[in-house]
Length: 358
Image (spheres, rainbow, N blue to C red):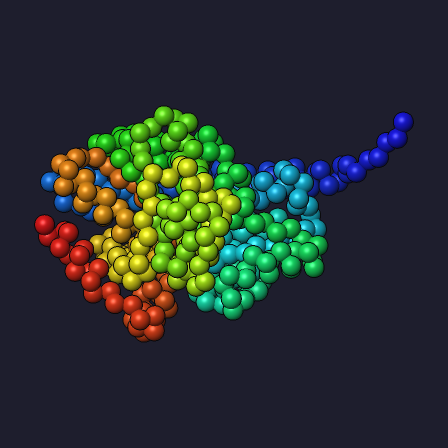
C-alpha cells in the first residue's frame, strides 16, 4: 500500500475563510436596480436598464470577478500565496483587483495601453498593478507568460466566464431581471440585449431563458472592431480581426471560448460612432453619464423597439447599464478624443431625434 498526502489543514482553513469572505460580498451587493428608460407612453413599449454600475466596483464585471474567484478557490487554483493575473480591457481588472485586495493577494492586470487612465488609477487604488501592452491582441498571451513566470494563476475570463456562474439561478443576473420585472406591465420581455465581451453574460441569460422556458429572445451586440458578429453570422469560431475594440468592456479580436453562439437569437454590429452618439444622447435623457457599451446596447434596443412599433406590438425590452460614464470623461465624452478617432456623431443624433419625434 502506498499513500501520498497533499492536504493541509492550514491551507483548507484559508480557503474556507476566502470563500466565506467572497460570499459575504455577494450577500451585501447581491442585487442591482432596474431603471425604466423614458419612452413615449403611447408607444406601448417599455425599456428597462439593469443598472450594474451600482456594484461596489462600479460595473457588470463585479459579478464575473466574484464568480471567477469562487471558481478558482473551489478548484484549488488559488491559495493564500497566489498572484492573480488577468487579461482585461479595464472593468474586469478593476473588480478582480477589489477581490484580490479583499483576500490579501497580489494582482496584475494585463491591459491595452489605450485603457482609460481612470480605470488604471482604480486598479492601483485597490493595490493592483497595471501591465500595459501596445498590441491589444497580445493581452492574453502576455498574461499567460506572466502567470508562468510568477507562478501565479491566470484567471482567464475569456475561457471561464460561461462556466463560473451558476446559470440556473442563485441570484444571477437573469434571475434578478425576471424577479424585478414581475410587477411590470409586460413582465416577460420580448428581448434581452447584452454586449459581447467574454460571452459569459449572454451564456448565463441564454441558458436561464431555456431553463425557465421563457419565450424571450436574446440579442447580442458587438462593437465595430470585434470578431463576434462575423464569427456568429458565418458560423466560423476561428474568425479574427486585427484592430482592438474602442468600446471598453465589449469586442474581442477573436471569438472567445465563453461565447456560446447557439444561445443567441440575433446579433447586431454597431458602428462605434453610433455607440458614442447614443450614449451621449441617452445620458442627457437619463440625467447621468452612461458607459460606452451601454450606448451600444441602446442602439440595438431602439432598433428592436422600432420594429415592434411598425408591427403594432406592445411589450418590454431589457438591456444593461454596464458601468458609469464618469470613467470615460476623457474619451467618449471628450470632443477632442472623438475627433481624434475620426468619428462623426451627427448621423446617429439625427436618427435618434427622428425616432423620438415620430
